[in-house]
Length: 249
Image 1: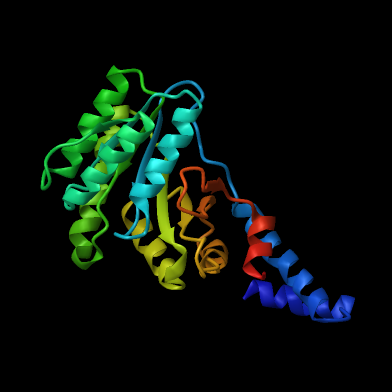
Image 2: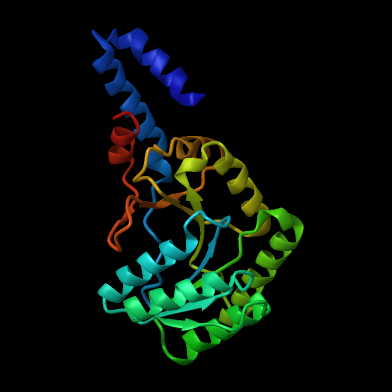
């Protein structure tokens, strides 16, 4: 692993006096690895910012969308959310609660509806109403892997066709507590859609989110956001230095 090799070299060169000095070097190596993949959330300054949110069930997609809606609404932006996780009735209801809470408009159909149709409706509504931000939720049931991946590809295709351009973000939400499993999830979702960034959730518990180091090293997918708590403001832009510090705290 690149970090260990880098650390070994620096220990040889700098001969740190104690454990704390070694930790400082390790922190610097981790931050250096993550710095190139730390990237702010893409925003379309001239019109609609369109985002597709993907990830397995339980990773925190709905909460991430809700917190982002709060962030954008606080900036005075008009937000539309497409509830295209039609497999879970609870997902639609949760988004509607977030919509009520933040003032975002939620475009939804009944549970079991075609997710691509919901995505199409949401994109049309965003265009017709002059929205600033469109976020589309998706299903994440990995037990029907091939169907899910086909469904995700279709939702992505429908959005791109309706908007007539690539999306600004395809955000993969990963649960920090899943460890190395997050790496295989990232690989899987990248097969279906062009993942442009990662939101790492549930960093408020015992999870340190070290998987992000492995993802940064292997997949070079930009890390955009970290979720550090339950409050609406607890979704933060990713800061490599602060993350490396917390990882070794």
